[in-house]
Image (cartoon, rainbow over all chains, first blue to last red; front, side, top):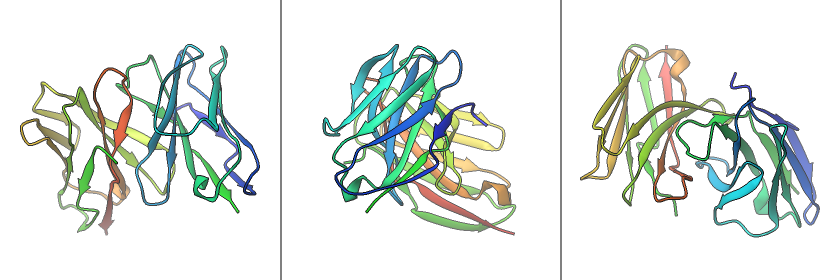
Length: 113
Length: 111
């Protein structure tokens, strides 16, 4: 158990819809990173939030957005869902912006039909 | 494109044997990390090796790093059924601290 939780566990959405995924970081961790992991692939970095500000972004379009709150929770929002957005979405928290050791949640499995 | 590539893609060995998996990367790194993932769920950090280190140990794990060849290896000794999982290498490079991941090695330990 890493102390990082994600909700929901599974989610089915229709193409064009919007989705919000939630993550609760370990207490004291001021950095959260979000990843997309397609089946059979490694995680792809979406973005990182440090003290409630975006601190880096991978190669994802603006319809992927996020928020980080003072209570160690965060959200990943995806607008205008596409079929290729179907994946496991992972959040990971860490003590600071360096990636020395990230603590991952169990993930949210998103299926877009 | 992904920075790291693991080799082999899949590995099946008998319990008690040693398992070795490799990771190659393309650009200079700050550090390289190995993670384990069970059944497509969350990842667990195993070990981190910095660019100025050549070898690290943690329990039954041994990681080596060869920066001249841009490669790393993870050795799991005396494998157990519980080691069955996918193993990923992730590299940190540049100043933005994001991790770039390989596609993983799927390890199966047969009883």
